[in-house]
Image 1 (cartoon, rainbow, N blue to C red):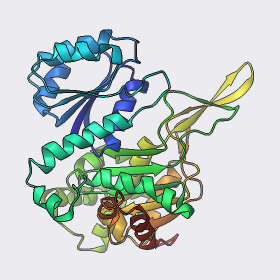
Image 2 (image 1 turned 90 degrees about the horizontal axis):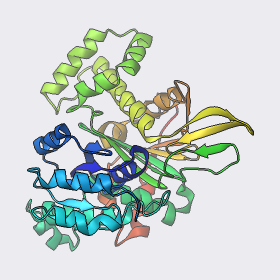
Image 3 (image 1 turned 60 degrees about the vertical axis):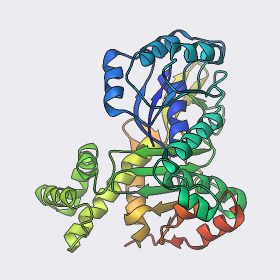
Image 4 (image 1 turned 30 degrees about the vertical axis):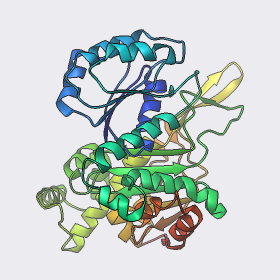
Length: 391
């Protein structure tokens, strides 16, 4: 599901809109804060998202930007449904301003400052998925056969990651990384912020279960954009291994032309591994939070932004490459390198164990969690392969 997110403050309502979209299995293809410009509207009209998630303001708070953006959206040629999850006091006026649009009103993503309320918006996104995609793309026969609607793969994995610690108590605090041909998904289930006298949280307190998706990080469809985004990491790794940059560029051209291409030599296998490492590095960079040191009259403190992953004890590799990997190094090496990023200390898992979803069953089992949570979660962890530390 291609979702465009509109919020008010980037670190607050916009961030919550993006989290709601991603946790519902969507891919955020555009996001905006404050007032929409003509070029913003033009871009949205050009890409035509499947859903527009429209938020902004606490209940009874600022409605200026919300109403201004509603007028601009009303005048646009956007045809997708609009889920409004903003200031409750402005909801009726938003609907009135967009009479030609399908506007679905739900509870505010942030009713009060600091209060996170993602589930109502997530539920509306799921409903639209079932209505527009399951019915519209001929999947009704699957629903009739199995008695339950299929979920988009990211949502199914999200539900499984949510349920595993609840029903398999030895598996609290876990993460999963799913590298595909076009995207890399990062999931985590751990408390996002540990309150202490020396750590101050900036921005929202992120949810315990979180998903991020990176559309520029993939091993085939997005291979060239992966190289662009991750060139700093790739170049350093190539230099350390004594590999030629041009050889990697030729490999990128080859796999971009043939998305089903499999490595035919040790060098090509190594190139794919380096690309997978780069996916892990940048997906973890964007998913995890960090600390910056600062000083106050009371002494030294740390300002935290984003999510704290230090307590994660297990990381599961899924997707084609990580599911097939027999080594933990593809995940361990980039995470270790990322611990210090610029002047920020990244809050990454400290001593995790690494596993592979060898049979790539997480998305399938995630479809069973609703009816059979104990059985689905038990099977999911039983089939994981504990990866070795070294190649």
